[in-house]
Image 1 (cartoon, rainbow over the protein chains, first blue to last red):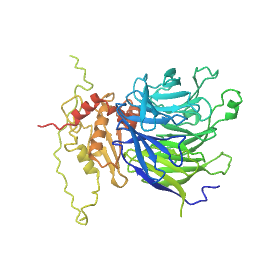
Image 2: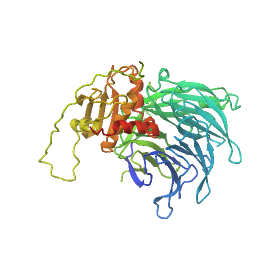
Image 3: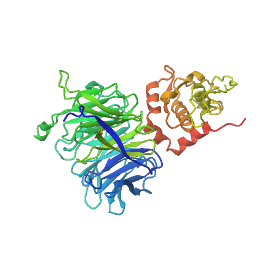
Image 4: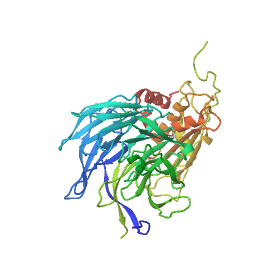
Length: 349
Length: 165
């Protein structure tokens, strides 16, 4: 199916109002889907909001507000793979772990240790590890023990500046981080003994970014990733992960392609959908979608702009995330304007 | 005697008396239309009892008096909702540059419509760590975190507070 052939548009399904300050991040619950998908959003108002779509009315409402825990901005949130826990990373230096008890959420643990603002939190594929990162330049790995216990397993130093995001690989226990120091670092424990080291740094000499890298996202199979930056580009990277799966050691990531000339303000977020559409959210209030052009050339694959949704929000877009649902192509976005929006990618009628 | 100030002897310029041009657009009688914002207006926001009177963090003079900000500091494109302010620290190693830049940004954020994109930078060639200062001043997340720091906010509010002469 060639998406470029279809006449597609991004339709606004609903605008979710409620936060009292800019919304920094949105996260879809990985297990809920139709008929009741669940979305979490977090904000400069120090809260996390859980939104649910009613199976009857099809409209979205705020089910709960997770408040009175963080004392400063909640910068990002992430669901555990089981969908039962939600982690919240805050400028107050802590990471909250919340359990969904049905009617409400309870904060079952607070992870402390970072010296200042926590920027991002990510669960590994099996839910046995959490990673966090901070302006203190470090990346922490936490082990999930039983009984609501979390233990700091590793403190990873290497970045020379503020670390903006951490993201575990979708299938392997390899951790990725991106930073204000313009690099992406890859962390791996070769002996699988919990001793993580930086095994690769993607910097300008590896065809990397020339300014702050804000986000990382992997394709479904985990052999490609996209990164976005203040340098106004998206970069696609690839690795021979079959090599890693067969135990032949670390397979390095290499630059595949750079998408430049499409953005004129910082790109804050990017997300790779399960059916290979890359979304970007930027400081010009627009959402852009890219797809592989499938025209192999001497220079390798290239990506085309599928569509640009101008003025998707009234202010900067901080986060874009595709829903895990296989049924429809839903995209959630969060903005400085305090709104969360749900979009549907559809063929024009 | 060591006073510890970054710039002990700033050059102080005369504060310009500005007569604001009253712009009348007779063709525009729609009350609901949004007034276009131009360079003069942003400069006014910055300068006339706005940034004009932003006090230098170290001295009892305004940024205009120290020629840190002038009319030429401001570039506005209202159709693109974009403003860029270029300021000149008085000394090359000014560690107050980030505070000054933050004050300018806060003043603009509080005065301009939310649709505006604001870029702040030091005048090229006027600061020893120009690129580093500019990067920090324009990292939205860093600015947001800084503005949650009560000590910094107090300093910014102090610089932005009107001085009653």
